[in-house]
Image 1 (cartoon, helix red, strand yellow):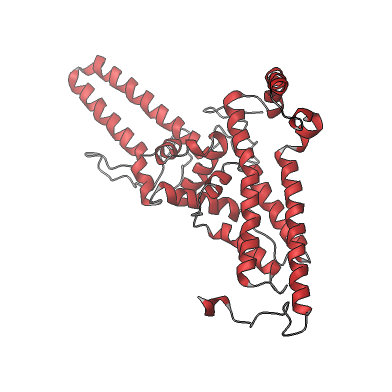
Image 2 (cartoon, helix red, strand yellow; image 1 turned 30 degrees about the vertical axis):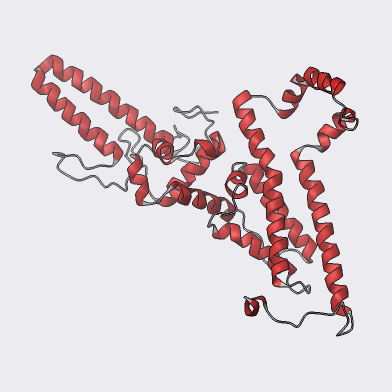
Length: 341
């Protein structure tokens, strides 16, 4: 299989046309910048040998124009002003890198987070990946916080919940939970952005999950505040359960070991600890318990117990609604939450 000439990733075979040489626009842009630098250096050396200092200065001006064009900046004396919204074009491949815009910036940041973790994402690093000046990003993304919001909104937007979804509140809530969990498996870093703050991202696609869950519960005699709590509880549980996925991905990148390999390497230290500490239950921890503690199995166990709890709550609400009017278990006076604010 062909690989990217810059990063070595496996390339998809082209359906038609010439075979690809790079895996992304970022790699293509970096390759172009390297070619520009090499040509400028060669021209400057050749000019110095052939024409003396005057030619060296001319070569330096040409190099400055080439670098300025690669950054999408205006270069004095260049004759025309480069469009700062355009990426550099490769004269060797004849392919344009296309315009720099917000979706391209966000997609590059997501790919970077998938590859190196969300801690590696910065405006400067994204600009480097795109082969542009860092200030050019701020024309489209105001801050790192806004970039985080856009990243979260994009990945949730790629996995919308179906309408109307399966029949029954439980099937709906379970489907929404599995879809969100699959998103965290694909992008483990997302849990870091949505679970470590009481001020969640302004991401309509993320909010759509909360809205969808509340609609699944609507009509079951729950007040609005309770539906909000259930919907947020499910999301909070999923985000917390997904945090180990992010930590495991980070540890795997750093150590190049799987969780099982890490555990095997620490067996002797574990046995020494159990011999000296009074931990009668933990000392029974074996292969079966280790498997049960895997994030996937914790997710499954917690999901069903949480839905069981919601079922109990709905049963209680139904029983209260069926009680005779005026009894202690009777319904409330029917005032909406908005009226009470």
